[in-house]
Image 1 (cartoon, helix red, strand yellow):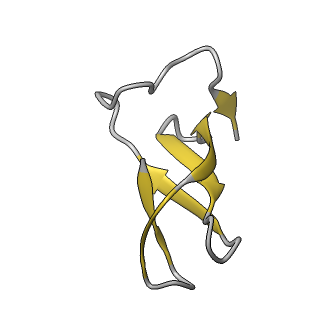
Image 2 (cartoon, one colour):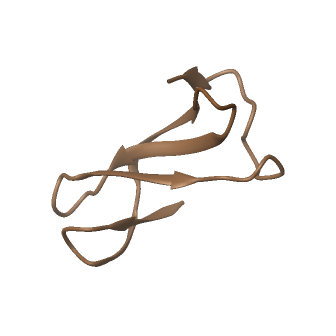
Length: 59
């Protein structure tokens, strides 16, 4: 899965992706840019694959 890195100014593959559910019940994938080391995230829709899996954390 890719996310936009603001430091690289391009889409990058997410390193160490983690599925999370925000306080307002929206799903996201959170991780690190492999090039710059910046935190990146991608908001998902409820129909995205892996939205409600066992590794989902609350944020």
